[in-house]
Length: 170
Ligand SMILES: [Zn+2]
Image (cartoon, rainbow, N blue to C red; front, side):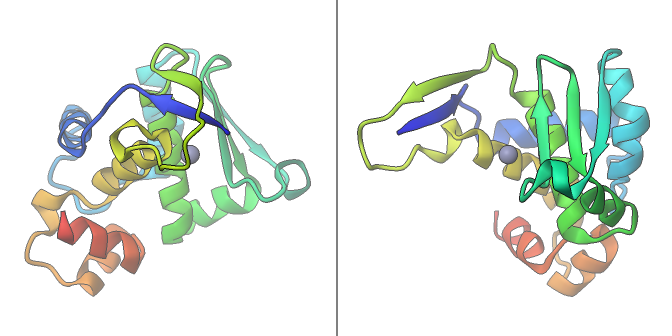
C-alpha cells in the first residue's frame, strides 16, 4: 500500500502555528473564523502565487477539495464553496482542511512511502490527521471555547457537533 507520510507534527505544534496565524491577522480572540475571506484575501498575502478554483461536481466527483502545492492552487467543488459561504459547518471545515494542506504540506514536507505493514500510520505523521487537527484548531481554538457547551461552540464558531466535541476534549 502506498501512503503519504508528512514531517512529524504534534497537535501542540499545529496549535502554535494556528495561534501565530490568527494573531498575525488580529483574530486571536474571534470565535468565528472567516475562512472564505481568508481563502480569498489572506492566502494571496501568505503566497503571492496562490490561487483557488471552483470546479463543477462533474469535474470533482466525490472529491470536496484538492490542494496542488506545486501549482499553488486549491480546487474546491462548487457546492462545497457555496456551502462555506453559507456557513455550512462541514464545508467550512473542508476549506480549512485544504488550507492546512496548502500551508503545511509541500513536496519538501511530505514523502510518498510504501508500507508493507497493516498497522496504521501514527497520527502525527499522517497528513490527513494534521490537516484535520489544523482545521479544528483554526475554527474552534481551545483557548476560546473552554467552558462552552457543544451547542454554543457550534453557534459561535460555525463548526459541527463532532468538531466541537473533539476540540473540547483536547
Ligand atoms: Zn486531506
